[in-house]
Every structure is written in structure tokens, then in C-alpha cells.
Length: 375
Image (cartoon, rainbow, N blue to C red):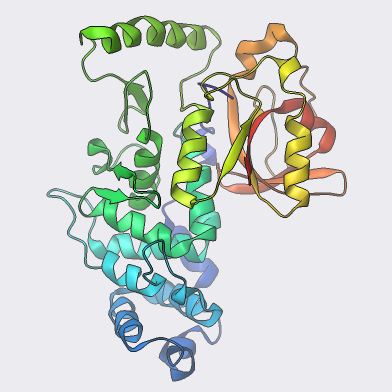
């Protein structure tokens, strides 16, 4: 993919905030409250982690305590982050953060939301924003490295900055503190905005309230300002003519994936640097790379052409896309999803619009443009 990624779903596809939607699925499950109160699971924790557990449990409602019980029973609460801190210690730290002045959320709100994300990563959703790549990486991190995910949330929500695994620094987007027109929860908004803004972008910085990337001062001088006002505006115009909207480049998502997960990956299907999609004839190895990685047990972020796509469960329709060079602008209007398995002649993936689905191998291959292959 290149500059354009992640068209937003129709408004009816956007779901409600975590605190509302997650409760029916978990609350009332037999035995959950007994697990919280019982000593068997707690006995496996260190003394500091037991103290952290008690502090976290005291801040939670019934659905939150059920989430906590499941993580305790599975052993996930002892999972360590990149700095060596356990998940339960990081949850306790998140429950103590001091939000910035005027924030519409409390530390307890953030704790409950982040806990829901790591207990049920499937709830993570991009809403109606152009953040499919950022949301896919958010989902990967929450589902594969829960403690690291909560550590990042605490840093972004509290001090407004956090050191990543490799020593890089990620910062909070200033206008992501205030709520916007989406139905995302506070943690989704803060994390997706910071992920969207992370790394270099010749167009400038990300603004959450407008869901755009632009330079703060269009009259900036120097080579950087000239580049943004010429090349950046030219790209904006081309994409606009194609009916698309600018998200972040595959190169930025590639870097985000590596720096947050600590996993090396290679980019296929894009020109060097990952800012622009390679012409069709140069993308021939993309499917082979995806299939090989999935067969080896990897989950692979990929971009799919969205033109005529109907992939929602119960509404799938076969619509092969011809990747002719003449359709290059349309191909750039792609959407990132996470491939989880290939079986029965179908490719199964998670769409960051909030659901699991699949396409036939033939249709998937006709839409596949590029991918981030974990090593």
C-alpha cells in the first residue's frame, strides 16, 4: 500500500465504547468472582504483585473483575513487559496515572478500558477513523504482549510520552485527550492517535480531531517546507481525485510494528521506503510471502484493495479485482487487516472495523497489494 490506507466503515459499522459492550459477554460467568476472591490463583503471584492485584481489583466494576479473574487463571498477569514489569504491576500503575488537566477520563476509566483490551482484544476497533494500520498494530500488541501494551498506555495517558523497546520515544497527540466524534473509548483514541503520528511523514503531524496529517504551519520556509507544500500537496491532490483520503504509509506502519512489538519484519509489495505502492508486475511475490509466513504460524498485516469489497460476516460477496496498471490510484485506496490463517480455500483475517471474516483465496489474492512479513 502506500500513502493511502484504511478507509473508515459506514457509521452503522461503528460499535459502542468498551465499558458498555464488553459487560454482557463477561459479567455473570459462573465462578469468576470466586476466582478473584480465592487464594489459589493469587498464591502464584509474588507479594508485590498480590498487592498490585488487590489495588487493581478495588478499582474495578463486576465486568472488570471478571476480566481480571480470567487473566489470573490463565497466568497472563505475570507476563513481563520490555522493562521486566508484570502485567498486574502495569495495570496498577495505570490505575495511578494522573491524566492531564481537563481530561474527560480518570485513571480508573483508563484501567478498565485497557484491561478489557488485553482480556478481549477483539473489542479493539478503529471506529470511523482512517487508522486501520495503527489499529491493527494496536490489536497485535494487546493480544501478544499485554504487559507491554498497558505500559505504553500508561505512558501516553500520564506523562504523554513513553520509551519503546528499542529506545525510541512515542508521544501523545495533544488533541487526542479530548473526546471526538467517534465512539472509540479513551484508550483507543489515545493509542491510535499516537501510533498514527509515530515516525517521519513528509506531510507533517497527525491531528486526531480532524483525522488528518498536515504541517502545523503551511508557510514554513526551508527545504522541508517547500517539500511539504509541493510534493505533499501534489499527493493530496492525486489521492483526492481517486476518491481516497490519506492515512499513513506502509513504511510508517512497518516501523511502528517493529518498534512496538520488538519483532523484525520485512515489507513486500511497496517501493523501497514503503511510501508508495509498487506497480503490479513488481508485487508478484507478495502472496507467496504471506502464505509462507501464515503456514509458519505467523499473523500477517496486509493491505487489501477495498473497491467493491463486501467482507462482513453474513454479507460476503465475491468480487474479484483486476490489478491493471490503469487502476493504480484505486489500488492505493487500500485497507489493512491481519491475516490469521489460511484453510479450506479461504483466507481468514481480522478486520479492524471490529470483526473476524474471510475471503476465498482467489478474491483475497486479487485484492492483496502489500504485506508486513514477521521474521
